[in-house]
Length: 80
Image (cartoon, rainbow, N blue to C red):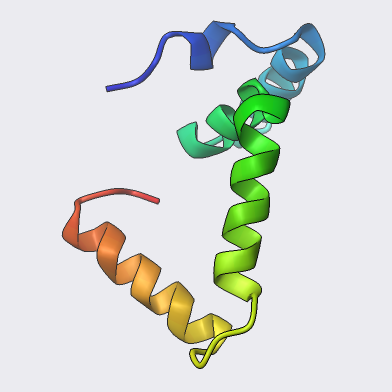
């Protein structure tokens, strides 16, 4: 399911950037569109959390965490 707002609810500059990307055959993934939709509300806080989780102090290396995330996404049939 894709939220309609992710196709049309971005500020004008962002829509232009997406259009240029389409011309270059570089389609922005839905996750990226979501993070850019309202960055102050969701994008920045989520990005900061993910940076901390994926790159912060841990017994696991960043590579191990990425592999775990990829495996979990695959099990959930998530393309991200």
